[in-house]
Image (cartoon, rainbow, N blue to C red; front, side):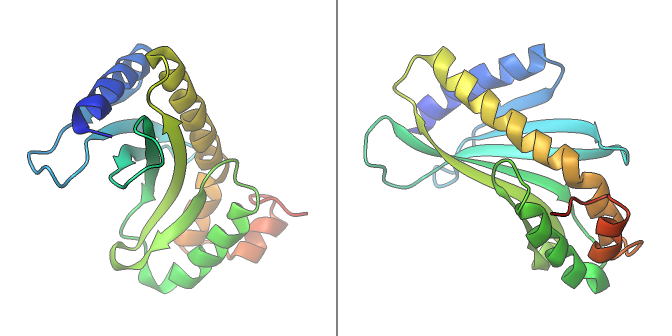
Length: 175
């Protein structure tokens, strides 16, 4: 997938998101080795009212077809989390991933960052409206997972409760 096609798709998606109250912008890097991004701000998420950033990009790798693209959604929930709680945050990620609609939560140790990542294959040769609808549907499910778990993650990440306590208090689901 070339950057020009990605930019066309992301510009259209940004316009749709803006119509629905999101802050979104397509960003094309001056460096040709960096992919074009769509940055989306989702403000005041959960009861904790956390602002999150979602970045979408087509991963630059060979695909089976010319019109196929591997689209990645990468949502940053928190950065700079207390290092002493990392082990419990990772446990929380593992627990939540069993109930996650799309993608998976993870913990990036160097930045003490909690994220959700989802990859999906997109047929960019389809009608633009179908591509945008597919992307928006995936985004809705990513946001549903984030909204469902962000308050529990904040509680665990800040050492207020353990994962076991969060389950006991019904902040986290339990089978």
